[in-house]
Image (cartoon, helix red, strand yellow):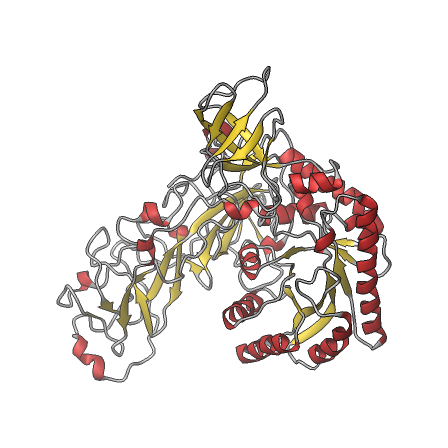
Length: 615
């Protein structure tokens, strides 16, 4: 499957591809910070626009205070990439989402949520009670200030505040009010007038709660179209602009050109239709249509849609004609929707295939395709047979020095271990709750393997041989589940330096940092924030962002690696005995040396791997 690699030229990218001009993006960030930070308000940009931890860290490096996301799934993906100071600005309702929220909060205690209903608040509190988590989750009351989408009415804020305060696992910290219905009003004075009216509702409600003794630390509001007005209102503490970073035609038509277009879609001319019309390979599936049709960056060409996959460009006499193979850039009408439309990788269905196995006491047997010989049970192949190309991005070459780009974990993965040499950090992304495998002597790239002790019953894929072989159902005792890790790398010039314990050589020079787990602490090393390096930048393809690999089932593509078992030949008939909890035993493999010294993930010389941006 196609997936661009770091260092690919702009001309080599497939189309349609979403690209970002980093110079323009960074200029937009600077403009916003220069404009709003002097007001004394904290800036908590909305990340639903970029859906990227890279951009989030860039914003914080410029002066922002954390970030916002609209959806729980966005919070999961960005937190997994190491950015955890997040406010989820939409209500979380329903048992599946509440369960996911609890697990997210278990790992990242900085997560904040909003509520507008007492029953919904109780449901989340009860789920936290059952989880055994003692720390309360920080909650803001969502207030309707005119959008009529979510939020309690002002008169409902006090009863809701009292209810939240009565719940053991919730801590009321503020109020939120979003005037989204005003963001794109083209008349400046009308937009300002209505915004100040909405802010009056928000700040008066917040003050009323304070007068009742509630600790209202945060009053958060605003968007790209209203942040300037909100920043002038006493009582507002935090602003949530988002679209400014990429901009789009809808905001440009409403608020002007103070911020510039940094995001576009690269398209290719695929057909000529007469003297002044061509067809491009970018249609309704690639370009947003929420506020009209996209525009060509070169405004001499006019766009109209021709269906899901195609669009047309026309021009007047005297304009240079476009030909088959030419490339153009298209500007979407809504950049908040654009990143969600680009997905360059989807795992094949075979990656989710699995077989059932169960423990039989503490004994190891084969149920199908074998007679109990160790070769049928002990040596398990890593990964679904022959399907690596379908289960991993094509830009990732397993067991090699190549790595997945961008330098953030795919959705559903977390940094399990990392090490740094000079300005370059290497990390291994593992599925949630997995650790890096550190045993030496294995014939595959050990630091790209993740492992976890498996429960008594689990469904897995197993093979009778290390290389190839038919997949079979087997019963294993005292085993571990393996997963292929996703290696990522970044330079200190791309992010702020991570916080790790330095190891020095005998001469005292820093050679590398120790392997560090970033899963358990909310202040882990990857939550340090920094910016992308400056310099000549034409653009970066972000189609392989945090949404890549979304939906991987944690045990769907794991395989068993058998541990030493007492009786490899005992048949499944022993299943009548009472099962015992498996005891993890020293792991020996046919290729292992008699050593179990932990291997710290080691960096190759940085010059051996290209880190050139798309250009």
